[in-house]
Amino acid sequence: MLRAKAPYRGGMSHSHQHDAAGHRDGLGHTAGHGLRDADGPRGGDGDGHGDGHGDGHGDGHGDGAHVHDGSTVEAEGAELLDLDGEVLRDYWDAALDRVTAALSDAPAGATGGAQVRVIDLGAGTGTGAIGLARRLPDAEVVAVDISESSLARVDAKARAAGVGDRVRTLVADLDLGWPDLVPIDLTWASMSLHHLADPTRTLSELRRITRPGGLIAVAEFDEPLRFLPEDLGIGRPGFETRALDVLSTVHAEVLPTLGASWAAVLGQAGWTVVDQHDVVIDERSPAGTTAGRYARAWFDRLSHGLVGRLDAEDALTLQALLDDAGPQALLHRTDLHLHGVRTVTLAQP
Image (cartoon, rainbow, N blue to C red; front, side, top):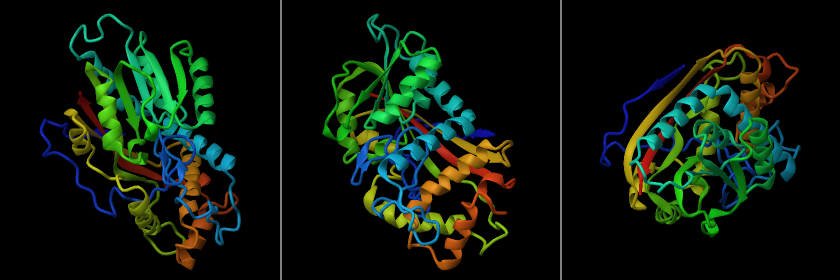
């Protein structure tokens, strides 16, 4: 179920406020599918936050002895992004429909008759890029990411969806500057900008190469996505809140713009915000096994940043949730409640 909150009405007074326990929720960042932060390649299209930035990528199953290598971490992150696109399909449809409608409402003739060019910034495994290509049948879509393996998945998925002739991929580290993509009509940036070293500078550069009348759409958390009931039937109630609070401290240091008011950041970069729309995700006990796989992948990623940071009881609770053969396994729970908010902010140059 999706609920839309009040849209942005202009000016900067609507900018969202976040505290360390709210948006800076420590959802740990899915490695290898987006832009670059202090620890290397990180997140993009989707929620996927889970590696904890710099703790050896231990899996968090008690003592952290099991260590994931880079290729395993990247593959797990890609799976999480694919599951995000599948489980939260209603969110993706609502967000991308709103963005493409806004582009259609842009001044006629802004492209001068040229083909519309769309950029998916931090494309991950391509949920946004392919969704935009389907909605804009005459557009060229460029999926930009730092991860070659993620972009290989985008290419394969685009061909399978019948849009491979209009979706191309580009490996780039935007902290080093923008590649030659002039001119741009629409940029979709989902869960990617907070990984940049200086998002204001990058957004300023993007504004200069965006066609007059073009758009940027920024999708970020307004609230952390959550899965679990307060009382799991194991350990102390409130496990998920405590786990997210632990990681919030880590992310406050390594991702200072996670939880920023993106309307304000866009304004600082010279953009004019024209709309801000909150999409509330509220799915109780989702049917089928996909939601369980999504929750399991999410907490496995999140566990990488919890090694050595949970108390003994919470560490055992996490271990039980990730034990696929156990009675508390996330894969088989029927009490999952996926809820949170993603905010889509639209701005023009």
